[in-house]
Length: 98
Image 1 (cartoon, rainbow, N blue to C red):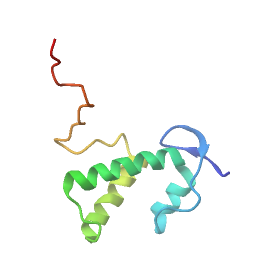
Image 2: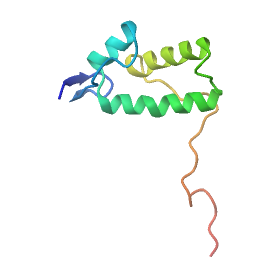
Image 3: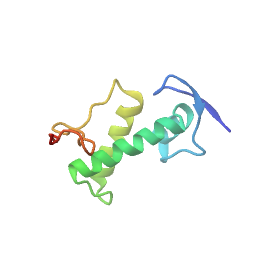
């Protein structure tokens, strides 16, 4: 198993099997990002796609996701989309009857 010093999580962890994207960004992710951090990005990208209603067939949406991936992995702490808040877990946030 290939190990990487994950810049996102700050420790040595198993790396990806191959670059996830073509080009420089894909190679940087392959060399410096762990499987665990990549899994975190998948969750974040789904959030972005759903929040903004992105179509992955749209080149502008693809570019936005690549920019967000760059920020998520290599920029200062990326933020969730403006106006987004996590859904309350089931049974939480709803007053309980006594």
